[in-house]
Image 1 (cartoon, rainbow, N blue to C red):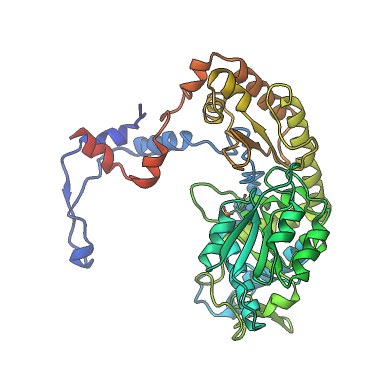
Image 2: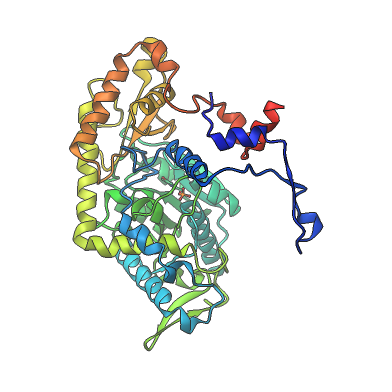
Length: 476
Ligand SMILES: *Cc1c(COP(=O)(O)O)cnc(C)c1O
């Protein structure tokens, strides 16, 4: 069933299409007819209000989306990023007229470098995956400059899907190594995979199981000694921010997700920001332009002929970067550390509440996220992770990430984030436990209180229809 607003119903039934008025728009670009219903303002407002209320976001309830981290989205950052000085600048404006924006970007690069333990940053990439790809292109350019032929990238089986995709897109052969029984990197498997052909090892630490790899220095040494580079996927930075840095762990290049870690919202596909930080030896390969401070002026400069070029038009998603910048300034270094401590504590608290009723593989102590398995529920009465996730929606809780990481059967990955209150955590646990005791029929057919129940996800992805025209055609 699909709940429609009055305007949607009118759009579907309105056959009284109006002729498009004459304009200078070229004929081939013109619509042939316009069918906008003639309605009072109040109905237009209600239309959008109803549509907005069908969405679930961090402003509606807990959002423990593991790894993808839709966390604290402060309103001050929204307000700042919608000021005219942020929205009404044009990329072709003379640099002398955007000194404030350039100063903000320059300072953001400095702050991210400090948080990452890196020597320089680029703010260009528009998402984490885009940042990964930029980083892999830099790694490739670096090895080529050194006259080395390396064609393999190694990653563990707990890696996020974008990691192998970024490496493959840059032309690398992807070598996946199995995790050790405790969920960390299997050093022996890594040792036998690393060779003169290895360009990089991609890792997120803690990994997607919420496990911090204690052998990280040994891993970095093994990879670096073979002449390969260490790549840090920073999507899990929330677990270590302010406590340690990827630089200290021995990584050479990292990406962060401003829309995950630094207070900027995401969802619906964008916009995001995936800055990439590098150690000194990779600076010449950073995308152009780079920002430099010359006396008291900020200038955009070409990064020379070793640069991988541009990753994106202009300078990145400035509004997202500005939100992250506001968040970092407002939190300060103590605040960032505090956010980490709270998210790790929240994650372990929730895990403790769930461990009687759900199986929790791979050891006890976790970082900012943990994975439960619904395999016990599936075996007992056929209730799967997907069913539990759908049922959570009925209780006003956003589902966790499900079926990832793939090495856990029926996985549900929870990341309660630093702004989750104890009441929220108790409620998530109470509902999860309640669902595990509910009538399986009830859970398998959930959700009941949403405008759309279950969709054919494969068909939706392959055959996306993104307009109301679909509804209109359906009626005819
Ligand atoms: C989200 C995520 C990515 C990709 O980042 P996007 O910004 O979504 O492109 C990569 N790795 C991990 C572990 C992630 O959680």
